[in-house]
Image (cartoon, rainbow, N blue to C red):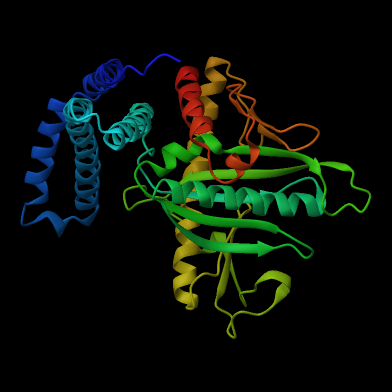
Length: 367
């Protein structure tokens, strides 16, 4: 087996990062940072809260990108020194540390490379993810819960925070639906490529005859609204119902009617929130979720008009995007990119990096 050429790997990583720095235009980002810091330091900044929100959000994004690039550049610069010391001292443990750092840098640079493709208007925002069981009965409800766990584990891997807003449990097993907020850098842009129908093929644990079943779960991802989106909701257009929060099997977990369900009558959109003890807090959160879904609906209508003009026959979020086959063989395959993995358990444990990266590239190519 040929000895690993560390110097060549370092050179390749250095070239990739240089290319990313060129695409990002780091000098321009530094100039933007200076301008935004000057605006953020203005004494009258918060006289206009909407404008202040835009300035502080933009500054946070630019600082985050600059810090990532600077950190990666510093780590790459340190690698030759680490390698030289390990070689000179013939220190096996030091060489292992170099290998680990090379692998970690490769992953981090690859993630940053993909992030450079996230240039949509809302890509930098937090995401609201809704998962629903679709066709397949009890297997579909169980599958919907498995999918939600898969995304929770993915978020853990990437230090995204998750706040579950509402969960509707199925009677026998699994869930009917769940909605949660994912907070972190470019959460919406990253997770938006997961929107669609996810198909599971397996031997059903709920079938006494051990037959193979196919079930489906729908994933919807929308950006979280901010103060500048101007989604006006007329009180006459909504119906608000309150009820008691419930857990699996209908067990009461709250003694007051604090959970809130809001129905937007013109569109039929229904949102719920039960994670707070206060009905007022749940109502405020549910209204924010409704605004996010109305914003996405407006954006979808605008995209549909453009697609109609250009003759684009792209489908809705309900189209099947990925299959997870657990029997008679083990395979997870994305139908848009043809990216696949044989380690199905790793995928269900949140190893979605390859699928998401290829999905982002696929989306960029389509545009």
